[in-house]
Image (cartoon, rainbow, N blue to C red; front, side, top):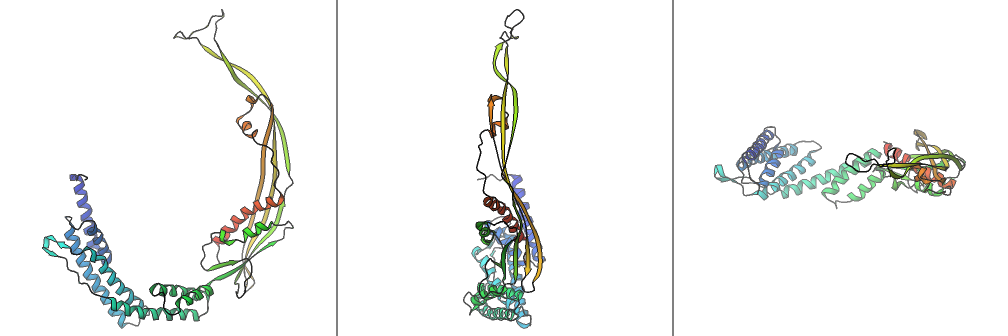
Length: 394
């Protein structure tokens, strides 16, 4: 067990005093449930601490005031014509129940300084909650149906939110699930995406497939659905054209360049001698050794293979109902294939570090033009993904 030093005891008392003062402030400000949550957390940790009595008394006070406030609000909304009244009444009854459930596990709570147990007036709100829920269910259902009657995408989306809340309260209420799905369908923007190739160069079929596979773009738009092929019984609101204007593939090129390498390398050592041929020794009497260097040479032939693809295009957003162009985003990328390898003659020791790396390489077959276009298309796909994620239709 950790030893409580005087300094630690002062720190613990300071923290406890601060939490008591903070709770008093919450109660004075009318933040009763915040005060209740803080007091419960303190008592869950230790209901027998030196400051437990203060937390319990504050919990009693905050609970009583919170219940009084909720009941006053319920009476007000029961008499008012506020359209939010069914919601407020239902969730206030739920709050009354949940507040009791938060405190109940702590009971009994003993207040040592007052020689009594804490007093909390608990009630059974199940009937009130059930009745309020029924009223609120009808209220939500009517609101959702009303939104759908306006027959606009924005209102269908509002209806969807309402039916989702109704489903959370009562998953089996009438035809709510069907209405929720219908609201989502009617609130969705269906987008028809087309690839148009004006470059005169064939686009690989697998690149088209990849570009039109929207599952790979990580799009997070609940209200937009992309189709590459028109589907029956769907009215497409928007269209996206991915136009390829230029696709250029350069000829295969091979560049060769030779270089002369020359370097002094250590080949051994010998004893240092004076003019008379005697071995020279250091101050410790040890023979002095000197390195022997030799100049070595080599010729290296560096070969560079290269081939490049240049792709230029655009992404055009259109309103298919009006035929109007909404936005235009340029696309451009270049993919370069390059392979460098080398051969040499002479002494390998004369080569540089970079030379030693590239002599390990070999000639590789040039990629086909189709492969080059496909590889360039990977960058186009990333650009398209960015455009789709950054630009929606709302």
